[in-house]
Length: 387
Image (cartoon, rainbow, N blue to C red; front, top):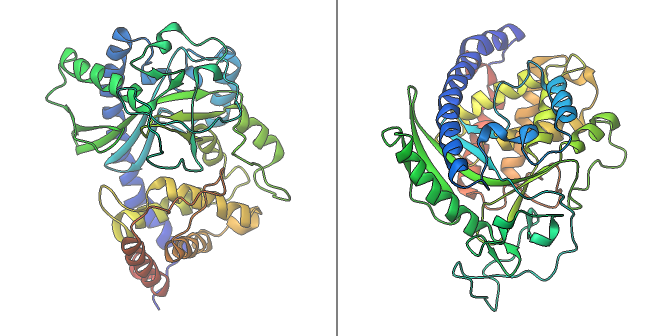
């Protein structure tokens, strides 16, 4: 068995992990500039869609903006360089939420029977697909005073805000914005299956695929489906949980009928404050992410993304909440690798906030098995991979 030392890991961090991070950061800045320009143009034509610079705490929908902005800035000062709307799933695959304006005063209602329509508005007698645990229906009645534009038949049917229709309107506006902003040589819309807007963006580092998702941002509320925190848990602290919940959640237009629950702001706060006790959790996570991207599961559309690794890190922190468990970088890396091996072998990774949902439910089983074998090889001889 070839092992590795703390010195080997520090060298790996400085010469490979940090280099990749700087490259990705530069790419994010390039993509962000173009998407900001495009969404700003879309917003001038259809005010229901906001520029991505208005995402999260900067949303026009937030009343108590100064207080939330101050809290967010204090929590993530120096820890989060990216726009909260941007999720880097892989170095060449980004997910960007486009905030929606005009839906304020949300109150979670008791779900009526699930309803399904064709995009032309005809009611379907039977569901095409039952909603997942992370899915939610959205009605105009859920909001205190929805803007009149949301009563438009192009986005709503019988009082239901239909994500596929919202995406279609956004896509039409995006196509016009690409021409208006003279970005046709840099940005092109890709063919998609289902209710997703996929675009290719040319950057100095190469082509990046971006999924643009219209998103309803819910501040100062927490969904009933997210049974969090858990009883008897020691991480994160009660105070931190209260703070995280104040940033709320999102509903993303990722399917024809249902809105997808997302907790990206909560996850950013958790990740940003994860080593306040002096541990090396984040370093371990970054090393595991580099190994995943280079060795275990490379490619632009891998079965395991940074989001899965982040979720795995949170669960591992719950199991090992003491700072003493995270003082040694070598042990931290091996602990995370073993946890990832277990998840890929069993094809099971629970969503951190909605526990009943398996994030690997629809993942290719053969690809997970191949990845599990590669991680097993690493655990047998970790030193040959850390160089």
